[in-house]
Length: 399
Picture: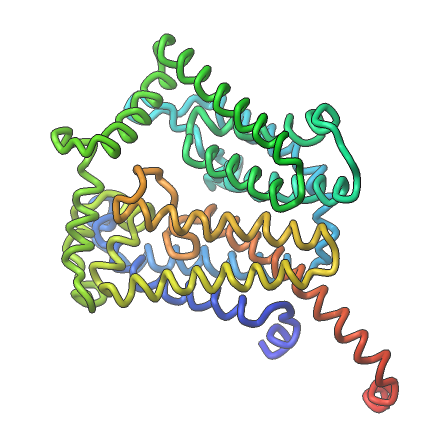
């Protein structure tokens, strides 16, 4: 154990924030999983806690392993992984999984293992690394829009397009994060406006075509429209569409300032996805305004440390890499919280490092490991500078 801690490198504050979020997650997950235990099991909630613990254990193993890798390795890996990710997404979409008549092809089952894997989460991390790599290459160059179409925007639109039929919120978030990274990376804003226009036109075309062709995509589009229209109109007559958000609001209102206490939530038994998509509402009910703001503070602190790591990175690629894979974590957390308090339409995004679910935890940990790898490089440079400035200290250590 001491050897492991000795080999932990990178931003210590970032390690601490991630560890705090992971440790805190046990309480709400254990509490919120009680309804799943009684609905789909024998009432044994301990197995859900053990499952969550195993996901986090593997997640931290991923962080540890990834953060030990030199971050420039990810530059080449992203080129290799992009076609693999596209194959995964195409295979996932081709499965044609439906729930309630709507397209729900989000998971790919790994053969011989029986584990379901959400391919869009892996695609998100890989695509952000790929975009960071490309932007770092053209940083000091003058490029035309035509030159960037094939190496940059074709992979982006392929990834987003393959995710869109089954998961609009994830595809929209990935597209938004790519645009933000391109803006921060110095990509010409006039080209970005054109890309936004192309993206909107593509989405409208998909909706128009999908609405006239009967099938799972038509049902999915109708679900999107219902969620958005109910949110903007404030129509409360559609009880089925407002079921989740109304119970989430009741849970939040019940929490007050200090909450009803750990494990004492009532709405966890009535709120669907209480251990994943709407876990923030359960947290507010049990820990009140204090717990809600404390969790928000941790995510903002996570954002602050990611920005610090990016600022101190020794290369343009390191800066863009840290921002590219780190920013979506906080962005997803803010979206999840906004949905719970009805500041945003229902999206189905989980709360990173808090919600139950293997793939989301593992891919979040992968992204965090990459950010720590960037910060580790900065530490190594500083250590080398100290050795160069004080050779006697190095000699004494050797003796």
